[in-house]
Length: 44
Image (cartoon, rainbow, N blue to C red; front, side):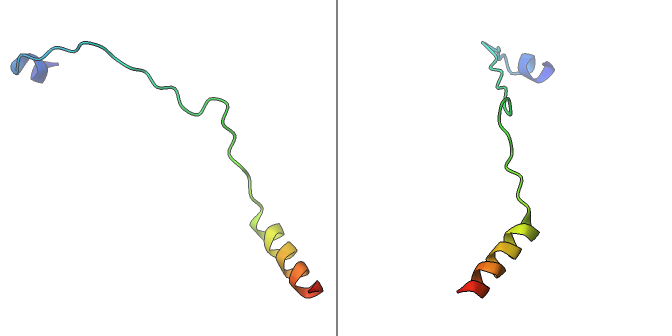
């Protein structure tokens, strides 16, 4: 605030961004994925 007054600057508005609401992160089970790939490779 002091810096803005020192250089004769004004704030005309603010913007609020809300992120992360309703977004679910995908949960990966790496061990199960590798086991499935190994099983598929053994069948081929």
